[in-house]
Structures are given as C-alpha cells and as structure tokens.
Length: 358
Ligand SMILES: N[C@@H](CCC(=O)N[C@@H](CS)C(=O)NCC(=O)O)C(=O)O
Ligand SMILES: [Fe+2]
Image 1 (cartoon, rainbow, N blue to C red):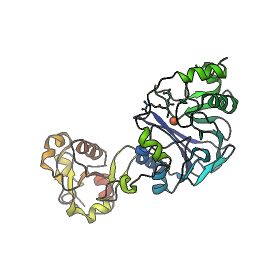
Image 2: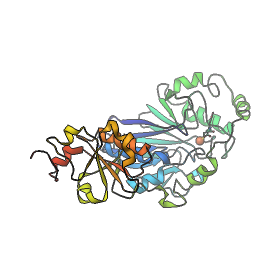
Image 3: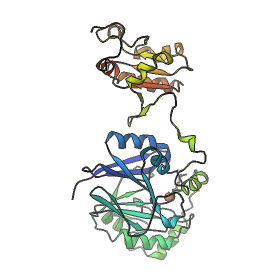
Image 4: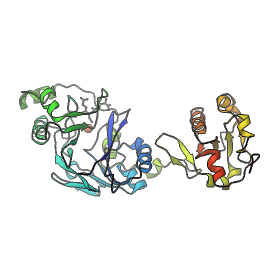
C-alpha cells in the first residue's frame, strides 16, 4: 500500500478538525469537513503541497460552523460529497453506506453512522488504519442527539456496529474536540468511552443522552441552512478576497504579490522598504520610488502612510516584509501585501532599481 500525506487542521472558534488526505504518487487529495472561514488557509496548503483536490467530504450537515465545500469547489474545482440521507442540496455526489471515494491509489469507504444526525457518515481508510467519525464518536464522548433528527438508540447501534467493529489499532479522528485532544483508537474507545464503551447498554446510553443539558450551538441558525446548500453563501460574492491586485494567500497567513504585477503598477501603490538604511542604499538597490521605513520603526511611523492607497512591503528576501505586512494589517491598513521573494527576486527578474550595483 502506498503511503499517505495526512494533515489534521483546526478551526479554533468552532473546535472543528479538518483533515487533508492525499496520495503522494498521484498528488490527488480529499478534504474532510473543511470550514468556511479556513478555506483560504486550506487552499494555500493544498497548493503549497502541490496537490489536486478531488473531493471535499462532509461527515454530516454541521450545526456549529459553515462548510468550506462550496468555496473549494469555486477556487480549486473540487467536487462535493455528502450523505444523500442528510437533505443537503448542491452536492456532486450523494453518498450512501458502502460507497468508496478514491484519490490516487488510496480510498475512503463511507459507512452510515446516523444518530447525531440522520445523514452522519464515518469515513474509513482503505487499510482500516484510520477512521474519521465526524460527531458519531468523539474522543471519550459522542455527538449530541437532541436536534437534527438525532436519536440516541440509533447512535448507540451505529457506533457499536460500524466503528467498534474496526480493528483495535484503527486510529480515530473526530470532527471536534473541545479539550484539544487530537486522536484516539477503536481499542481505547471500546474500553474507556464513558458513554458508549465498556459494559454500557443501549438503555444506559439513552438515559445519559437525555440529560446532557447542552445549550444549542451559537451558530446553528446560520450554519444549518448554509450547510444544507453545501456552504454556498446567500450572496455568492461575499467570499471574495482582496480585489486590488491578484494576491495569493500563503499557508503562513500572508497576502503576497508577485514582482511582475508590482513592476506594472508601481505608480498605484505605496512601496515600503523595511530594510536598514545601509541595505536600502547598498548593492541590491531598491524598488524605484520605495520609501524607507525600517521594520523596527514601522509601527511608530505608520501614520505617514495613506490608508487609501495599497501598500506593498519589501525587504531583502521577503521575510521581514511579511512581518511588516502583518504589523500594518494589525494597525488598520486593509490593503497590504508582501512582495514575494523581496529584492532578491526583483533583481533576479531584472526589474529596474534605484541605487545598487549592476
Ligand atoms: N458551544 C458549542 C457547542 C457545540 C455543539 O453542541 N457541538 C455538537 C456537535 S455539532 C456536539 O455534539 N457536542 C457534543 C458535546 O459538546 O459533548 C457551540 O456553540 O458551537
Ligand atoms: Fe455536528
């Protein structure tokens, strides 16, 4: 069996885990339970790892956050798969129990594990070394059963018949953890899960779940209708990124600009060079018209810059200027981007400089 590229990603506000799985040979990938607000981050990772996102897979219609499925479909051309039993519209593939989703030489098997919602699926990796349980089984817990067609007795049977029958060593990855725990295993949960493990009977579990007394998720009124559209916003342009230049968003969280765009639009932006004066006047020279504001004094001098005109930050290699872009964003400038590769790339591409040696 070929190996696997695997990443566990976290959305802090909703405590949601998103999982990226890819086949290293073909670079084909799937994303399980992407979060709308993290779509830029996840897309950057897919692109930086050189992957082709084939599918976004939902474990269920979430009540606590909006899926990024539709956004990824727009930007990366991925297709949307979700249980056909959950009532969502806009999917490319309604999944049923036993369906296989292939990516390169790897595949996930969908198993119906209803109970938290009627359309919950658990995705089991081809070699049964990993399973993605959604909210059917959480680490030492499980999803609530008090809304979205939830049923405690159905959930009890789903977990016992479809998850606890996997090999003991199968690693389990849930859709959420509210304490920061990251994974478990079938053997562990079969013994130690306080709701579903050990000798607990179905009627014990039903009694337990009837008395959870949880408040409804804060986002439920927005999340459920949006997820029933697979994350398509009511106003579809709401998700657009900055429009002033063709920026790319990096997994490190920075908006970047390519030198060729800057060269053609120099007059439209404020170029801020954050190197030291001796570098600014040194061998590499600087971008024509650039303003020298060394990184250490940037925040104190930010008032000299206009908020109306976009800012491009520059340094030798693009590292200090990335930090500068973050600092300026925090200071309230909303059109800021880092020049990718700094003066080194600018020079390598033979664009004009002021000062400097040939
Ligand atoms: N405080 C959270 C509650 C989230 C919540 O209720 N999560 C559901 C999954 S969608 C659940 O089953 N939680 C189980 C638990 O908290 O034990 C929010 O407002 O989003
Ligand atoms: Fe849920």
